[in-house]
Amino acid sequence: MKVLTVKSVDILDEEMQNEVHYALGMHHYTDYVFRPRGAKRYSATIVMEETGEVIGNITAGSASVPGREFVIDDLDMEANLIERFRLKEGKVITHRQSGWTWEE
Image (cartoon, rainbow, N blue to C red):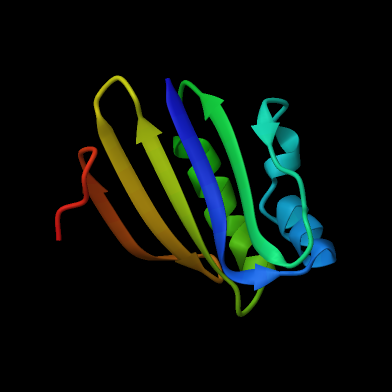
């Protein structure tokens, strides 16, 4: 099982958090955790077997939110592995992979 969390790098007001939620396509997943609250970073988490297609959809959706940066953490609990993607305007800026602790 994998746990995928997508977060905004910047603080967003509630209205923008909702816009981001729909732009990234996170509303399509029934088992997500997201609740906009005041001026905070956008964050949504889903649990699923395979996350590759979702990561592709989020990356593509980030193009419709110009000027905003997002971080995706993709945790594979069984393999003890986490991948981190940093996105901006439809492109992956950085991609890192590690075990439970980040190695620089």
